[in-house]
Image (cartoon, rainbow, N blue to C red; front, top):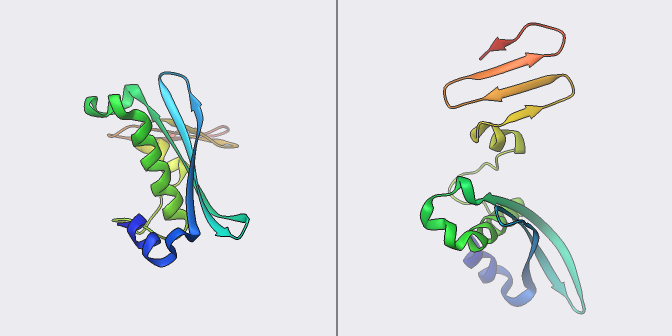
Length: 130
């Protein structure tokens, strides 16, 4: 739907370019760029990255991991341009890591998250839960 809206508004004046940034056999990172064609020049309007790990996707997606990652990168680039999908928010990197149960290091705070609990630890004080 977002791509169709973009094409209806701009037609062939817009190019979406994808580039594989990393592919090590287990995970793939794709960068997508939305470019405005201006004569012989292209102006970068927005970009978006997506990273998918084969160990953390549903089994039916494993055979098409690159396509899935590219579609996600396009969606993020279009979202960064203001063409949002079903929701009106773009999650931050920290929110994505928390959703995956990762640890988020900051200058003096570390957040460890799981589906059941979030624990925030400060370097100089006791840990507390939220």
